[in-house]
Image 1 (spheres, helix red, strand yellow):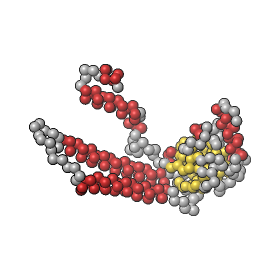
Image 2 (cartoon, rainbow, N blue to C red):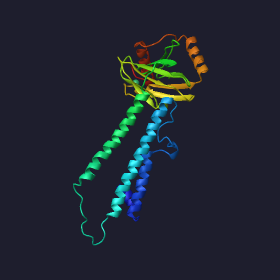
Image 3 (cartoon, rainbow, N blue to C red):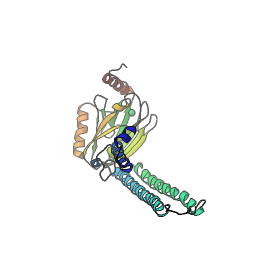
Image 4 (cartoon, rainbow, N blue to C red):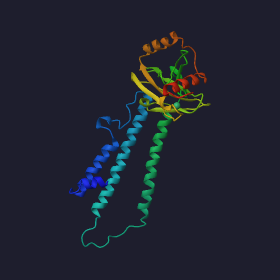
Length: 281
Ligand SMILES: [Cu+2]
């Protein structure tokens, strides 16, 4: 700040402050305007359920902007209309004005209640599990990667930090994820789904999505689960249903038949993680 002050010496103070403010804003946001299209820093959803989260996000932002504009308006309006004029006596003070105090208390409560209501409604919609899925995938999160057991087809894909697994999903078909962990708590997160859920040992969590867009999306563990947490990455590839069948056929041909849910592969994967990092086991 000292440096800034000396550099801006000779410049009107307000201009210097404005320049500093603009520079700070640019630095802290750290991204170009192209990174912030209509979705306001949230990825475009690629599932039916993601659309719900997306509109909740947009609606919330819109409401917050309205509240913000109203608040700024009131502050600026009051500052301008009731500013002190030359030779004015002290203006009439409005302390302990009960209606205003009540308004200040009740309005935020209403705002929070409305947000809660919409969040609760959408959350129960997104996490509702019906029994009408086309595909069931048992996602096993373990230290330090993922196994995807395709229940109906009876095949699996097993990942490691060295060899990131690909989770194939058919476009337009409902997929149920059954999340289990043999060791510690992980979190199954595909940012483009706008959805993540904890993977908890001794407990089975479930959620469903219907992918709507073909493409390759990245996935990761979103719960700090140990030394190589950052290596718990995977790919999600949404493909057309016939290609999906073909991919599962490849797993079968590779002998990846059955399911892996035990801690056996945990040790294997942990060793792979250690060798990649260069540590001992
Ligand atoms: Cu993890």
